[in-house]
Length: 328
Image: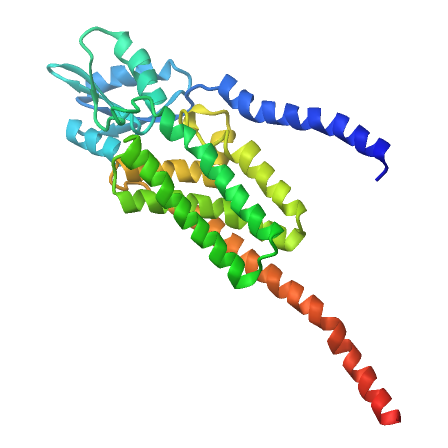
């Protein structure tokens, strides 16, 4: 490529990339609003019917789940089946929230539900850490893990590691990242307080899902695979993860897509592990494992294909050499 074409490419491509990044990060934030947020309702049928009618005025903001009593509603919040619940009792109305699941949703419920009438008591069933009440630190941890995964996958590719060595490097680096991230978030900052090893496992698996995907695509497509996978994870996965709010607060289908990518699945698994005793972790962990397994499989497949292509010419020349030897 001539220097003139390179100049034009830089001048044109950089603004395009900047505009794409701005759209990916700014558009979901500008369109944040509740969309079918799971919300429980419990109490006598006549009283809950009035509550549901009031919720219907929010035009699809909430997805109502009915429970028999406060205990059942509280269990649903703790199991992450709903983000909160409205419980109607003879003594008054009680609003159950879980700021550990999403501080923004908990605040939203207080603004829209508790503000509708006097005498509404708010109970934070699963509170966020006192050192991180809004979950800002937890959401901020997503980008460093994504960058660590991209860096690990890129380094494995650029350093020429293949096959088993590449797999060992990816797993080893992800394990160390998981332990380091847990030491910082759990022991130093104190923003998560679940099982230490489970948290380290989630951090590490999230990093491995990204790094394996980067290295796997690069093993099949070449170094261009690094940019392709990094763009997918950074420009789509990171802003659609719901880390700063919740998937149901993002534009459709952005929030749903994000949960199928490593950042979104990692955030969901980490919240469940750190604050909800592992409730609702099966789905996110399966998605992270799927990304990691496919990525590592692609790394091994790429090494096998390169090995075969390297040995194929030698195999093809052997019959010709044998014929020449016989003629002699």
